[in-house]
Each structure stands twice: as structure tokens, then as C-alpha cells.
Amino acid sequence: MDLGNVRPDGVRPIVVRVPVEPVEAAMEADALDAVVSAGEVAVRGPLFGVVAQSEQDGQRWRAVTSITAPFPQMSRDSLNSLLWFRAKDGVENRAERRALLAAVTRLETEPVDELTVLGTRYRIVRAEEYAGTGAGGIELPRPTDPEPLSADWSLGSREPEVDADLVLDPDAPLTPALATERLTLRDFVYAGSRFPDFMLRESRRARRTHPDVVLLPATFTVVERDGKGWGPVSRPHTTALGARKALDFLLTWLEPRTRGLIPVDADRLVDARTMAAEDPGADPELVAYAEASERLRSGRVNQLEVFDTTYRIIRTRRMLRWGCDGPEKPRPSDTSEHGPERIHPVLDEDGVVHHDHAEEEDD
Image (cartoon, rainbow, N blue to C red):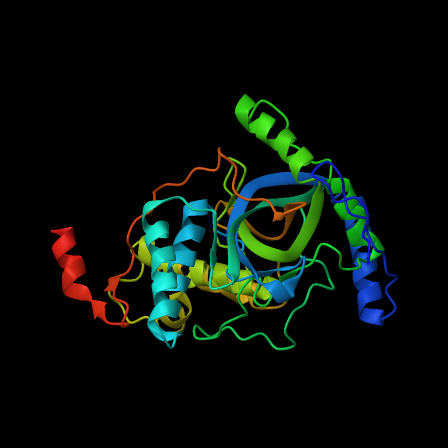
């Protein structure tokens, strides 16, 4: 199928499909309502991840890590680990292990953003994170965003990882709302005095070299406002419930220990809820955290005030810029807190781990 002009200065045509299923039609209506209530875009900054492409993937790429890392080197380290463990446990001969270990060596010494190993092309990619905003502030979760029928608040429960099994297909048909969002974001560039000139130039250049946009699944994050504006206090989550559980953990487990209300060496199952329930004379501050948890667990609560802080569950969105060779890599201005380094023990071609050798090199 000829999809038109996909030169570096061209864009792909967008195939639009009309939603026919009732649930999808309701999600489309929610998206249109969001344009009215939160139609402006607040940029939160870049996120990074690892994607892969093999011969059978065609134009598509597959996410092999969540595209949520705040620095590109964290994604390079994730790729390092992925290849190291594959070399350790996932090969049957020395030649394959040798190829994987050669890639690991490069990742230990160079800020590599792309490499090909055993027929698979790996790339560190850059996504732009943003959120809708309007008169009511940053957009909350939508009524049709997926939620489990029964909320499991136990510490041991787990939600799916962000971007698990995600396939990035620039030619996939889109609903009218998603197609409109994608078209609108094609012209997105940084602007304003908060960005240095070199970042503005990089942003304008990316619009030329990667003129298309691929939208990633929505995520959900806890933010707080304490008089100085909103700031994130959790990582992105797959569901709003996952973000609420992160907030519940913050209020009942982490904050009480940070403030000395619960001993740091207390049993992991001890939290503000258990202590307030067992001790009628518990510290009022501890009781306030337990009561906040009760309010949070009472339903689909997306905003909560505790003492002088307002917490909100927000709906965050991400986009990848896409060019003729696929998704955008990190830009020169995308720096990291640390550089490449060895993060695993030495592994030889026979699959033997040498812990002593690593310790000798550290000395």
C-alpha cells in the first residue's frame, strides 16, 4: 500500500475510522468534551524508552521498555540489562552470546542511541509528555478511562506495566478525535523564554526531520500543589487506580515514616490505617492521614486535600515524533545525571558470571 510522501520533509496520510462499538463511541465523546474543558496543552518535558524493530515488523516498532524514563541514559541502562540477561539466560551458543556481550560493552562505555544485535534493531526514543489544561486546571481522568471493576488496595497487587506489548504503528487507523490530536501536534514546537535558544532550534529542527506524530497510550500521575504550583510526586501509571494507590502509599506509609509518626524500622504492613485503628489515642496527624486514605478509597476520587497540600490524579499524554526512519532519538540537549558505566558483573562467552573480576576492577 502506497502511503504517500514520507520523505524527511513530508508526512504520512492519516487513515480515519469511525467508532462503531458503544464503548469506543463513549470514549470518543469523552475526548470531544475534553477539548472543551481542557483544550490547552501544558508541556511537562521529554521522556525516554527503548523500542525494537526486526525484519517482520515492517514500519512498526515494538516498545521493549516503558517510555517513561526521565533521562536517556536510564533507557540505555535498561537496554544494557535487557541484553546482558539475554546473553546470560536466553542464548544457546557462544556466537550469539558474543554478539550480545559486544553490544553490552558498547553500552557500558558509549552513550549509544541505536544498535543492531542478532537481527534486531534497538533504539532509544524520545517522547514528549503533556497534559490537557483549562479553567479547571490540569485534566483529570476521563469517565471512560479503563478502571478495574473492583479496586484492590493491597500492597502486593500489581497493575500492568506502562507500554507493555505496545506496537508503534504510524499507519494504524485512528478515531476522529485521535486523528485531530495527531494533526494538531504535528506543528508543536517549544516556545517561550523558559527554553534556551539551542533547545528552541532543536525543536524546530525536529519538526522538519520528524514531521509525523505517533500518540502513545495515556498515563496517570499524582501531582501535588503546595502554594508553588503543581509538581509530580509519582511515576506514570497505566490506570488512574494505579496512581491513586501510589498516593495512598504516600499518605499512609511513606509520609508517616518521613515525619517520624511511624518508626522507619516498623514492619512493612504497619501504616497510618493500622495504627489509627489499633490505637484510639494515636497522633492526630497520623489519624488525619488515615482519614485521607479512607476518602481516597471511597470511590473514583481524583483530588484530595491533606493539611496544606492538594493532591490530584492527572491524565498525562505522550507523543513520539516520527520521521522517514522511524521514531525520534534523544536530542543533544537531552542530558543525563550520569554517563555510561558497567552495571552488571563480567559475563564470559560460556555464560559464566565472574563476580570476583568485577570486584577487582572496582578496587
